[in-house]
Length: 153
Image (cartoon, rainbow, N blue to C red; front, side, top):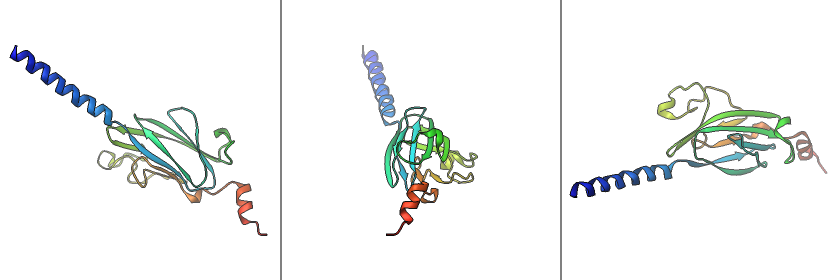
C-alpha cells in the first residue's frame, strides 16, 4: 500500500510540473507604430488589427507561428493596397518569444535576428525586447498626411 501512495504522489508532483510549464508558455510583446502609416498586423492568418500612427498595441505569442505586417494609408485601407508588406515567422517557447528573421547566425544563443544581417526596414524586429515590432519613423507617411503637415496658414 505504501508503494501505491508513493507512485500516486510522484504522478501528482510530475503532473503539477507539466501544468505549471504549460501555464507559463507565451509572452506579451508590443507593436509600436512610430510612422505616419496605419500598421495592419495579422497573427497566424487571423483578422487584421490596425495600429494607428504614433500608437502601440500589445500582442500575445502563445505558440510559434507567423506574423504579417502591412503599412497602409488610413484606417479603412486594406492590406491589398499596402505601401509595404512583409511576413515573418514567430517563435514562442515557454517564456522566450521572438520574431524569426535573418540567417540563423547564433540563433540558439542569442535569439532569432539578434545579429541584424537581413534588412527589415522600415521595421525594427525584436527591439527593444525580443518579440517586439517597431515601425520606424523613417517609414514615412501617406501623401495626404504629409501634405497637411507641411501646409502653412
